[in-house]
Amino acid sequence: MLNRSMLLGMTVLGGLLAATTLANAEAPTWVDGKLAPLADGWPNQPLSLYVIDDPGTTDSIFATALSKAAEAKSPVSIRIEHRPDFSTYSTWEAQAWLIKQGEMADQGNWMIVYTAPGNIVDLIATDLKTEAGVDLSDINYVNMVEELPYLINQRADAPWGDTLEDMIKYAKENPNTIRWIGGDPGAGQTAAMRYYMDKLGFTAKLIVGGNSGERALAVASGDGDITVSPPDVLLPHYEGGKLEVLMVGGKTASPPWDKIPTAESLGITNDPWGTKRGLQVVNAVPEDHRAWLEELFREAAKDPEFIANRKTVPGIGLQYFTGAEVKDMMNQAWDAALPIMQANGVYWKDNVKK
Picture 1 (tube, rainbow, N blue to C red):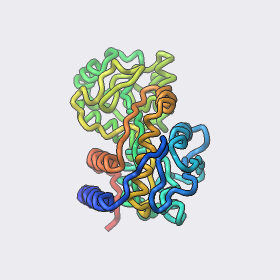
Picture 2 (picture 1 turned 135 degrees about the horizontal axis):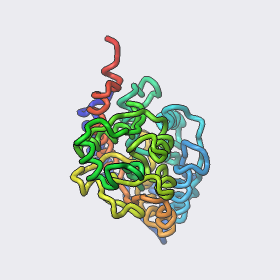
Picture 3 (picture 1 turned 90 degrees about the vertical axis):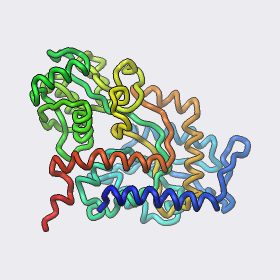
Picture 4 (picture 1 turned 30 degrees about the vertical axis):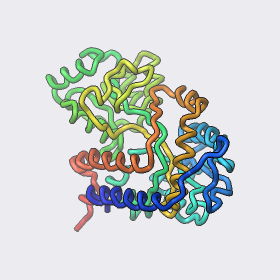
């Protein structure tokens, strides 16, 4: 079981080991616009990005755009493989599968497209070392390439007004009366909304309302007052005039919500929530191989065509984070989510029969 000290310990130890390894490792080099193979000859076979979903999904579209940009700079081809056949804890199950695949995974040729930090909530709600055979210590991050914030939104005809300030004032005057359409107590977006409410100082009445899309629809239809949603989920209702956005998570807001207050502007620093997307490998991958992948995909993320492609996604933020920075974000997400999940009675360790 992971706790705060263990997570920090893994980050510190991992950073020290990585620094020691890199000090003795070959740095990636560029030759005529392509990243050269390392002295050991790697990579000399194609790279594969595994999408743990169907073709045409958001992860698939991201992987296709990123691989196209990276392949122009890579000495080997880059393939997209789809694996929609995993079950409840799909990314964790996929990582457990990848660990068992041998040389191609162990050398870094095979990697998984992941989203975070919702998987932290999975760790807190479920003993995933028992259920799936892996936990956070089994993840080796290459990078994080983009992020979609969570947005607090409300029905367009709310009686209190159309700003976050209006809603908070009403909520304070009428505690626990605003109808918040949320997920079950162990859901990531539920934890995120509780985090935001605590930071902003208001309360609301939770009504559990299905998946993220169903929750946004309930609010747009007037069956609820507020919810928190990713941009792609709320966009059709926003464009139809049924939802209003009150706050954008994170530091910056992109069109069409660039005039809306951000979490950072409201004093919520280091907001850990949202959907952040990147690549991960297994722990067996040599550090210089992982660093080579980080370098390749860092440059791919700067490609103008890739940037233009991704900016067609409303609200998206394009900021590259190293593997070490991702580990730090996951620790922050753990710190934010754990007390919320404990308060809701869904921390798995608290529910183990003694």
